[in-house]
Amino acid sequence: MIYLDYSATTPVDSRVVDAMSPFFNASFGNPSSVHRFGQIAESAIDSARESVARVLNCKPDEIIFTSCGSESDNLAIRGAAYAMREKTGAKWILASRAEHPAVTKTLEHLGKYDGFLIEWLDVDERGMVTPEIVAKAICGDTAIVSVMYANNEIGTINLIKEIAEICRANDILFHTDAVQAAAYLPVDVNELGVDMMSLGAHKFYGPKGIGALYARKGTALVPHLTGGGQEFNLRAGTQNVPYIVGFAEALRITEEEREQRVAHVQPLRDKIIGTVLESIPDSRLTGDMESRLPHHASFAFKDVDGNLLLTLLDAAGFACSSGSACKTGNPEPSEVMNAIGLSREWGLGSLRVTLGKDTLPEHVESVLNTLPNLVEKARRLK
Ligand SMILES: *Cc1c(COP(=O)(O)O)cnc(C)c1O
Image (cartoon, rainbow, N blue to C red; front, side, top):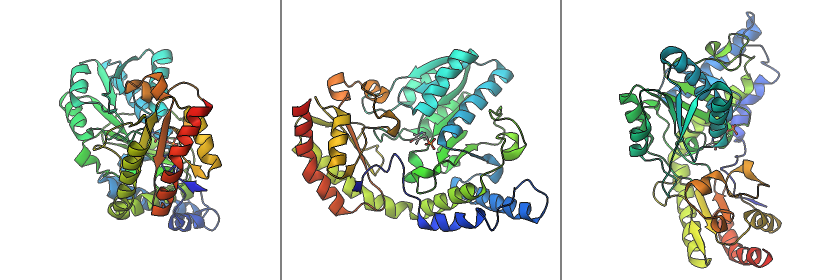
Protein backbone atom coordinates (compact mmCIF):
# COMPACT_ATOMS: atom_id res chain seq x y z
CA MET A 1 0.00 0.00 0.00
CA ILE A 2 1.41 3.37 -1.01
CA TYR A 3 0.37 6.35 1.09
CA LEU A 4 -0.29 9.50 -0.95
CA ASP A 5 -2.50 11.39 1.49
CA TYR A 6 -0.09 13.45 3.59
CA SER A 7 -2.50 16.40 3.65
CA ALA A 8 -4.96 14.26 5.63
CA THR A 9 -2.35 13.29 8.17
CA THR A 10 1.28 12.24 8.48
CA PRO A 11 3.01 9.46 10.42
CA VAL A 12 4.70 10.63 13.62
CA ASP A 13 8.45 11.12 13.16
CA SER A 14 10.32 8.61 15.32
CA ARG A 15 12.42 11.45 16.79
CA VAL A 16 9.15 13.02 17.93
CA VAL A 17 8.00 9.75 19.53
CA ASP A 18 11.34 9.57 21.37
CA ALA A 19 10.94 13.12 22.69
CA MET A 20 7.41 12.40 23.88
CA SER A 21 7.86 9.03 25.50
CA PRO A 22 9.36 9.99 28.92
CA PHE A 23 6.31 12.14 29.62
CA PHE A 24 3.86 9.23 29.57
CA ASN A 25 5.29 7.50 32.62
CA ALA A 26 8.74 8.46 33.98
CA SER A 27 7.83 12.17 34.08
CA PHE A 28 4.08 11.96 34.39
CA GLY A 29 3.42 14.89 36.74
CA ASN A 30 0.62 17.41 36.48
CA PRO A 31 2.24 20.67 35.34
CA SER A 32 0.03 22.60 37.78
CA SER A 33 1.29 20.66 40.82
CA VAL A 34 3.66 22.39 43.20
CA HIS A 35 5.94 19.38 43.87
CA ARG A 36 8.86 18.21 41.84
CA PHE A 37 6.80 15.92 39.59
CA GLY A 38 4.78 18.96 38.64
CA GLN A 39 7.84 21.14 38.18
CA ILE A 40 9.39 18.68 35.73
CA ALA A 41 6.19 18.58 33.66
CA GLU A 42 5.85 22.35 33.81
CA SER A 43 9.38 22.91 32.69
CA ALA A 44 8.83 20.52 29.73
CA ILE A 45 5.86 22.66 28.67
CA ASP A 46 7.86 25.86 29.15
CA SER A 47 10.65 24.52 26.93
CA ALA A 48 8.14 23.37 24.32
CA ARG A 49 6.49 26.79 24.31
CA GLU A 50 9.87 28.52 23.92
CA SER A 51 10.78 26.20 21.09
CA VAL A 52 7.51 26.88 19.24
CA ALA A 53 7.95 30.62 19.84
CA ARG A 54 11.43 30.50 18.28
CA VAL A 55 10.02 28.94 15.11
CA LEU A 56 7.12 31.40 14.91
CA ASN A 57 9.36 34.34 15.90
CA CYS A 58 7.09 35.40 18.76
CA LYS A 59 7.03 35.41 22.57
CA PRO A 60 6.35 32.15 24.43
CA ASP A 61 3.30 33.64 26.13
CA GLU A 62 1.74 34.24 22.73
CA ILE A 63 1.42 30.47 22.23
CA ILE A 64 -1.66 28.65 23.54
CA PHE A 65 -1.66 24.87 23.29
CA THR A 66 -4.99 23.31 22.29
CA SER A 67 -6.28 19.83 21.48
CA CYS A 68 -6.09 20.17 17.68
CA GLY A 69 -6.05 22.52 14.72
CA SER A 70 -9.84 22.70 14.80
CA GLU A 71 -9.83 23.85 18.39
CA SER A 72 -7.25 26.53 17.58
CA ASP A 73 -9.55 27.84 14.84
CA ASN A 74 -12.47 27.81 17.28
CA LEU A 75 -10.58 29.59 20.03
CA ALA A 76 -9.28 32.25 17.66
CA ILE A 77 -12.56 33.02 15.94
CA ARG A 78 -15.00 32.58 18.82
CA GLY A 79 -12.66 34.09 21.37
CA ALA A 80 -11.86 37.16 19.30
CA ALA A 81 -15.43 37.61 18.05
CA TYR A 82 -16.87 37.70 21.58
CA ALA A 83 -14.10 39.96 22.86
CA MET A 84 -14.33 42.40 19.95
CA ARG A 85 -18.10 42.65 20.18
CA GLU A 86 -17.81 43.34 23.89
CA LYS A 87 -15.17 46.01 23.29
CA THR A 88 -16.43 47.79 20.17
CA GLY A 89 -19.83 46.35 19.30
CA ALA A 90 -18.46 44.98 16.01
CA LYS A 91 -20.43 41.97 14.86
CA TRP A 92 -19.34 41.13 11.34
CA ILE A 93 -17.09 38.14 10.76
CA LEU A 94 -15.52 37.65 7.34
CA ALA A 95 -14.03 34.44 5.99
CA SER A 96 -13.34 32.95 2.60
CA ARG A 97 -15.70 30.45 1.03
CA ALA A 98 -12.87 27.95 0.71
CA GLU A 99 -12.04 27.63 4.42
CA HIS A 100 -11.79 24.32 6.26
CA PRO A 101 -14.99 23.25 8.09
CA ALA A 102 -13.25 24.07 11.39
CA VAL A 103 -13.65 27.69 10.31
CA THR A 104 -16.84 27.62 8.22
CA LYS A 105 -18.89 25.65 10.75
CA THR A 106 -17.66 27.88 13.55
CA LEU A 107 -18.84 30.96 11.67
CA GLU A 108 -22.19 29.36 10.88
CA HIS A 109 -22.58 28.55 14.55
CA LEU A 110 -21.72 32.09 15.62
CA GLY A 111 -24.26 33.38 13.13
CA LYS A 112 -27.01 31.01 14.15
CA TYR A 113 -26.66 30.99 17.93
CA ASP A 114 -24.78 34.16 18.82
CA GLY A 115 -26.17 36.85 16.53
CA PHE A 116 -22.99 37.53 14.59
CA LEU A 117 -23.26 38.54 10.94
CA ILE A 118 -21.24 36.50 8.49
CA GLU A 119 -19.87 37.57 5.15
CA TRP A 120 -18.33 34.94 2.89
CA LEU A 121 -15.49 36.24 0.75
CA ASP A 122 -15.46 34.95 -2.81
CA VAL A 123 -12.40 33.17 -4.10
CA ASP A 124 -11.23 33.28 -7.71
CA GLU A 125 -11.00 30.20 -9.94
CA ARG A 126 -7.65 29.33 -8.36
CA GLY A 127 -9.25 29.33 -4.91
CA MET A 128 -7.48 32.52 -3.90
CA VAL A 129 -8.88 35.33 -1.79
CA THR A 130 -7.50 38.47 -3.37
CA PRO A 131 -6.45 41.34 -1.08
CA GLU A 132 -8.83 43.55 -3.10
CA ILE A 133 -11.80 41.39 -2.11
CA VAL A 134 -10.85 41.77 1.55
CA ALA A 135 -10.31 45.51 1.24
CA LYS A 136 -13.73 45.91 -0.33
CA ALA A 137 -15.54 43.76 2.23
CA ILE A 138 -14.28 45.16 5.51
CA CYS A 139 -16.10 47.94 7.30
CA GLY A 140 -16.06 49.70 10.65
CA ASP A 141 -18.27 46.98 12.07
CA THR A 142 -15.95 44.08 11.16
CA ALA A 143 -14.69 42.17 14.19
CA ILE A 144 -12.43 39.62 12.58
CA VAL A 145 -11.28 38.35 9.20
CA SER A 146 -10.18 34.75 8.73
CA VAL A 147 -8.41 33.55 5.58
CA MET A 148 -6.49 30.30 5.41
CA TYR A 149 -2.77 30.36 4.63
CA ALA A 150 -2.99 27.34 2.32
CA ASN A 151 -5.98 25.30 1.23
CA ASN A 152 -6.15 21.64 2.24
CA GLU A 153 -8.21 20.51 -0.74
CA ILE A 154 -6.60 22.34 -3.64
CA GLY A 155 -3.26 23.48 -2.21
CA THR A 156 -3.70 27.17 -3.06
CA ILE A 157 -1.55 29.56 -1.03
CA ASN A 158 -3.15 32.89 -0.15
CA LEU A 159 -1.42 36.28 -0.01
CA ILE A 160 -1.52 36.31 3.77
CA LYS A 161 0.96 39.13 4.25
CA GLU A 162 -0.98 41.49 1.99
CA ILE A 163 -4.33 40.58 3.57
CA ALA A 164 -2.89 41.02 7.08
CA GLU A 165 -1.63 44.46 6.13
CA ILE A 166 -5.08 45.57 4.97
CA CYS A 167 -6.65 44.34 8.20
CA ARG A 168 -4.02 46.00 10.35
CA ALA A 169 -4.46 49.33 8.55
CA ASN A 170 -8.15 49.14 9.41
CA ASP A 171 -7.72 47.97 13.02
CA ILE A 172 -9.38 44.64 12.32
CA LEU A 173 -8.17 41.36 13.76
CA PHE A 174 -6.80 38.90 11.24
CA HIS A 175 -6.66 35.14 11.81
CA THR A 176 -5.13 32.59 9.50
CA ASP A 177 -5.62 28.83 9.55
CA ALA A 178 -2.07 27.61 8.87
CA VAL A 179 -2.77 23.98 9.75
CA GLN A 180 -2.09 22.82 6.20
CA ALA A 181 0.59 25.40 5.42
CA ALA A 182 2.95 24.85 8.34
CA ALA A 183 4.47 21.67 6.93
CA TYR A 184 6.05 23.55 4.02
CA LEU A 185 5.68 27.32 4.27
CA PRO A 186 7.44 29.86 6.50
CA VAL A 187 5.49 30.54 9.69
CA ASP A 188 7.22 33.67 11.02
CA VAL A 189 4.22 35.55 12.42
CA ASN A 190 5.95 38.93 12.29
CA GLU A 191 6.92 38.45 8.68
CA LEU A 192 3.32 37.42 7.94
CA GLY A 193 1.85 40.18 10.10
CA VAL A 194 -1.04 38.07 11.38
CA ASP A 195 -2.76 38.57 14.74
CA MET A 196 -3.66 34.92 15.18
CA MET A 197 -2.53 31.71 13.54
CA SER A 198 -3.74 28.12 14.03
CA LEU A 199 -1.50 25.06 13.84
CA GLY A 200 -2.01 21.31 14.24
CA ALA A 201 0.85 18.85 14.77
CA HIS A 202 -0.40 15.87 12.79
CA LYS A 203 0.03 17.65 9.48
CA PHE A 204 3.80 17.97 10.08
CA TYR A 205 4.82 14.58 11.48
CA GLY A 206 3.61 15.23 15.01
CA PRO A 207 0.81 13.40 16.83
CA LYS A 208 -2.90 13.88 16.24
CA GLY A 209 -4.86 15.58 18.98
CA ILE A 210 -2.55 18.52 19.68
CA GLY A 211 -2.63 22.02 18.25
CA ALA A 212 -1.52 25.53 19.03
CA LEU A 213 -2.82 29.01 18.53
CA TYR A 214 -0.55 31.99 18.16
CA ALA A 215 -2.30 35.11 19.49
CA ARG A 216 -0.42 38.40 19.29
CA LYS A 217 0.08 40.06 22.65
CA GLY A 218 -2.84 42.32 23.44
CA THR A 219 -5.34 40.30 21.38
CA ALA A 220 -8.36 39.98 23.65
CA LEU A 221 -9.81 36.45 23.65
CA VAL A 222 -12.77 35.05 25.54
CA PRO A 223 -11.98 31.44 26.50
CA HIS A 224 -14.36 28.78 25.11
CA LEU A 225 -13.21 26.06 27.46
CA THR A 226 -13.56 27.30 31.01
CA GLY A 227 -12.21 25.84 34.22
CA GLY A 228 -8.68 25.90 35.59
CA GLY A 229 -6.21 28.64 34.76
CA GLN A 230 -4.06 26.65 32.31
CA GLU A 231 -2.75 28.26 29.12
CA PHE A 232 -2.96 31.82 30.47
CA ASN A 233 -6.60 31.34 31.47
CA LEU A 234 -7.48 30.81 27.82
CA ARG A 235 -7.88 27.05 27.66
CA ALA A 236 -8.79 25.11 30.78
CA GLY A 237 -7.77 21.50 31.30
CA THR A 238 -4.63 19.76 32.50
CA GLN A 239 -2.13 20.10 29.67
CA ASN A 240 -1.29 17.09 27.54
CA VAL A 241 2.40 17.18 28.37
CA PRO A 242 3.75 14.45 26.04
CA TYR A 243 1.75 15.79 23.09
CA ILE A 244 2.84 19.36 23.72
CA VAL A 245 6.45 18.16 23.78
CA GLY A 246 5.75 16.24 20.56
CA PHE A 247 4.18 19.28 18.90
CA ALA A 248 7.23 21.40 19.65
CA GLU A 249 9.71 18.78 18.48
CA ALA A 250 7.79 18.11 15.26
CA LEU A 251 7.65 21.83 14.49
CA ARG A 252 11.33 22.32 15.30
CA ILE A 253 12.34 19.50 12.97
CA THR A 254 9.97 20.78 10.27
CA GLU A 255 11.57 24.21 10.40
CA GLU A 256 15.05 22.70 10.31
CA GLU A 257 14.28 20.39 7.38
CA ARG A 258 11.86 22.66 5.54
CA GLU A 259 14.07 23.38 2.55
CA GLN A 260 15.11 19.80 1.95
CA ARG A 261 11.52 18.59 2.29
CA VAL A 262 10.36 21.10 -0.30
CA ALA A 263 13.23 20.11 -2.59
CA HIS A 264 12.22 16.46 -2.22
CA VAL A 265 8.48 16.70 -2.90
CA GLN A 266 8.21 19.52 -5.41
CA PRO A 267 9.72 17.78 -8.46
CA LEU A 268 7.68 14.66 -7.71
CA ARG A 269 4.53 16.77 -7.50
CA ASP A 270 5.34 18.53 -10.77
CA LYS A 271 5.79 15.16 -12.45
CA ILE A 272 2.38 14.04 -11.21
CA ILE A 273 0.64 17.20 -12.40
CA GLY A 274 2.34 17.18 -15.79
CA THR A 275 1.72 13.50 -16.47
CA VAL A 276 -1.90 13.42 -15.30
CA LEU A 277 -2.93 16.45 -17.35
CA GLU A 278 -1.14 15.02 -20.38
CA SER A 279 -2.29 11.40 -20.16
CA ILE A 280 -5.86 11.63 -18.86
CA PRO A 281 -8.52 13.15 -21.12
CA ASP A 282 -10.99 15.60 -19.57
CA SER A 283 -8.75 16.27 -16.60
CA ARG A 284 -7.86 19.58 -15.03
CA LEU A 285 -5.77 20.88 -12.19
CA THR A 286 -7.72 22.38 -9.30
CA GLY A 287 -6.05 25.29 -7.54
CA ASP A 288 -3.13 27.25 -8.89
CA MET A 289 0.06 25.98 -10.53
CA GLU A 290 2.29 28.68 -9.07
CA SER A 291 0.86 29.63 -5.70
CA ARG A 292 0.58 26.04 -4.50
CA LEU A 293 1.82 23.86 -1.64
CA PRO A 294 4.88 21.98 -2.91
CA HIS A 295 3.64 18.50 -1.97
CA HIS A 296 0.10 18.95 -3.26
CA ALA A 297 -1.46 17.81 -6.56
CA SER A 298 -5.22 18.03 -7.01
CA PHE A 299 -7.39 17.37 -10.01
CA ALA A 300 -10.92 17.21 -11.27
CA PHE A 301 -11.93 14.56 -13.79
CA LYS A 302 -15.10 15.13 -15.77
CA ASP A 303 -17.86 12.55 -15.31
CA VAL A 304 -16.05 10.55 -12.65
CA ASP A 305 -17.41 9.59 -9.25
CA GLY A 306 -14.55 10.70 -7.01
CA ASN A 307 -15.38 8.26 -4.25
CA LEU A 308 -15.48 5.36 -6.69
CA LEU A 309 -12.09 6.40 -8.01
CA LEU A 310 -10.72 6.41 -4.46
CA THR A 311 -12.07 2.91 -3.91
CA LEU A 312 -10.47 1.69 -7.12
CA LEU A 313 -7.19 3.33 -6.13
CA ASP A 314 -7.38 1.73 -2.71
CA ALA A 315 -7.95 -1.70 -4.24
CA ALA A 316 -4.94 -1.09 -6.48
CA GLY A 317 -2.79 -0.20 -3.46
CA PHE A 318 -2.88 3.60 -3.36
CA ALA A 319 -4.22 5.75 -0.53
CA CYS A 320 -5.39 9.08 -1.96
CA SER A 321 -8.20 11.50 -1.15
CA SER A 322 -10.91 13.38 -2.92
CA GLY A 323 -10.01 16.60 -1.17
CA SER A 324 -10.75 16.83 2.47
CA ALA A 325 -10.47 13.74 4.67
CA CYS A 326 -13.71 14.77 6.36
CA LYS A 327 -15.65 14.61 3.10
CA THR A 328 -15.73 10.85 2.49
CA GLY A 329 -19.16 9.45 1.75
CA ASN A 330 -20.64 12.81 0.78
CA PRO A 331 -22.23 12.63 -2.70
CA GLU A 332 -22.21 16.42 -3.22
CA PRO A 333 -19.23 18.36 -4.60
CA SER A 334 -17.32 19.99 -1.77
CA GLU A 335 -17.81 23.65 -0.90
CA VAL A 336 -14.37 24.33 -2.27
CA MET A 337 -15.23 22.83 -5.68
CA ASN A 338 -18.34 25.02 -5.73
CA ALA A 339 -16.38 28.07 -4.60
CA ILE A 340 -13.90 27.77 -7.48
CA GLY A 341 -16.81 27.52 -9.88
CA LEU A 342 -16.64 23.90 -10.99
CA SER A 343 -19.84 22.42 -12.34
CA ARG A 344 -21.23 19.27 -10.76
CA GLU A 345 -19.93 16.99 -13.51
CA TRP A 346 -16.38 18.16 -12.76
CA GLY A 347 -16.73 18.87 -9.05
CA LEU A 348 -17.76 15.34 -8.13
CA GLY A 349 -14.65 13.91 -9.76
CA SER A 350 -11.98 15.41 -7.53
CA LEU A 351 -8.75 13.70 -6.60
CA ARG A 352 -6.03 14.85 -4.23
CA VAL A 353 -2.57 13.30 -4.26
CA THR A 354 -0.32 14.64 -1.52
CA LEU A 355 3.30 13.65 -0.97
CA GLY A 356 5.58 13.47 2.03
CA LYS A 357 9.13 12.90 3.12
CA ASP A 358 8.82 9.13 2.66
CA THR A 359 7.41 9.34 -0.86
CA LEU A 360 9.76 7.74 -3.40
CA PRO A 361 10.00 8.35 -7.15
CA GLU A 362 8.91 4.69 -7.61
CA HIS A 363 5.67 5.44 -5.76
CA VAL A 364 4.97 8.29 -8.13
CA GLU A 365 5.83 6.18 -11.20
CA SER A 366 3.57 3.48 -9.94
CA VAL A 367 0.50 5.65 -9.35
CA LEU A 368 1.02 7.41 -12.68
CA ASN A 369 1.07 4.06 -14.46
CA THR A 370 -2.19 3.02 -12.84
CA LEU A 371 -4.27 6.17 -12.63
CA PRO A 372 -5.26 6.64 -16.31
CA ASN A 373 -6.76 3.14 -16.43
CA LEU A 374 -8.62 3.63 -13.17
CA VAL A 375 -10.11 6.94 -14.31
CA GLU A 376 -11.27 5.22 -17.49
CA LYS A 377 -12.72 2.36 -15.45
CA ALA A 378 -14.50 4.78 -13.12
CA ARG A 379 -16.02 6.52 -16.15
CA ARG A 380 -17.27 3.19 -17.53
CA LEU A 381 -18.76 2.15 -14.18
CA LYS A 382 -20.51 5.46 -13.63
C1 LIG B 1 -6.43 19.39 9.12
C2 LIG B 1 -6.89 20.79 9.05
C3 LIG B 1 -7.61 21.37 10.11
C4 LIG B 1 -8.04 20.59 11.32
O1 LIG B 1 -6.95 20.21 12.12
P1 LIG B 1 -7.18 19.04 13.21
O2 LIG B 1 -5.91 19.05 13.99
O3 LIG B 1 -7.38 17.79 12.42
O4 LIG B 1 -8.35 19.42 14.01
C5 LIG B 1 -7.97 22.69 10.01
N1 LIG B 1 -7.64 23.42 8.93
C6 LIG B 1 -6.96 22.91 7.89
C7 LIG B 1 -6.63 23.78 6.73
C8 LIG B 1 -6.56 21.58 7.91
O5 LIG B 1 -5.89 21.07 6.88
